[in-house]
Length: 466
Image 1 (tube, one colour):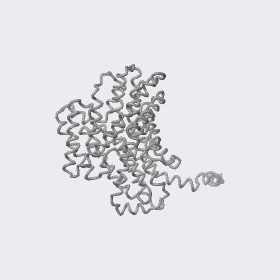
Image 2 (tube, one colour):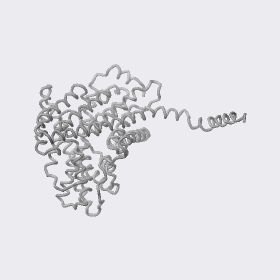
Image 3 (cartoon, one colour):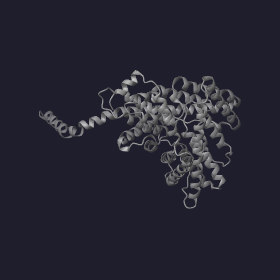
Image 4 (cartoon, one colour):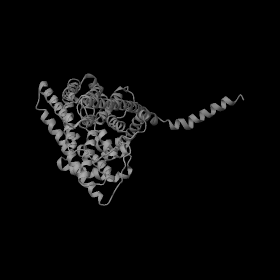
């Protein structure tokens, strides 16, 4: 019995010598230390994404409630909300305006050592906080916006902050990988679509080969998505709509609808660019405030005429069309939503176009299915293809759009039709503008960030080696 401890010691010594030391090498230790901050950032991203979603749900329900009770309030509440949301951005963090995805793309481009100090203008925690506040105020007031693009910018800001907090001697992954990974984690947590987050990185955020960042992206997407699922459960963004994946002659309808919706999405993107260009004519704060209030007032008129379908994210409309479609949606709802999205985005506050583009595509698809006499059993497929196609027309990421809609509905039987729709929409949209909406805006944010003075803290950050 006396020799038992020595035998245990011998066993432990053998395990340490032959197993642990061989597995836990210096390379493994370095990889773990490199990945640990990303795991923390992914966990925070999942928590923040859930909180942001809950805030958005509350804000949208609040806007519906007050509009149902006192419709005339829209002529006061909506313009005031537009102005407050704009002022938060204009005074506290100008880079918090709009979607957030072009800012992340610009931040990735500025990730080289000579320019990294300028990324703080685009992706600081202050920008993230203002993003949340401005978008919430705008949505309460009836803005037609989504939270997915803002979630991506907020996530990238979290990853950047965690990356900057690492001690000088800590083995680090590159700053570019931090921002790319943050974007993927943000989209995955926002939509509960891990594959969509990965494809989005490859297709939209970066042109770099995926082998450079695949492990970081995969683990971040898993951690952020599972954190969101742990709180909300394994939900689907749009449930399980009934879909019959028709082929044969019906593919002709799919191609027609996809090209039409792709053109409509590209036209919407051009409209946003034109309106934003026109808005820059107003130089003084009173002129800009008048423009913003005017946008709010026009949207108020549309909301008073149409009702709550004219405001908000549009998710309730998608669910109604997919699950309770009475095939009586008025023809004018699409142009009203189109105008509402443009007015909300051009007001200069924070808010994305992902979810609202999906809802616009769903409305347009429903109208087209009635126009070409599609049977009710095939209408849902047309609507899903239209959602993919309109979003593709705006953002020019056909595979991301198809995978997002696929994961949001779990309709794997329609994957080929969704991919076909995305590709046809991409080709049609390129006829209007070969450059994506986000690429246009990214260049402006790069110039804007480079024109900002670099703080002492960010200057020292730029001097650190990659």
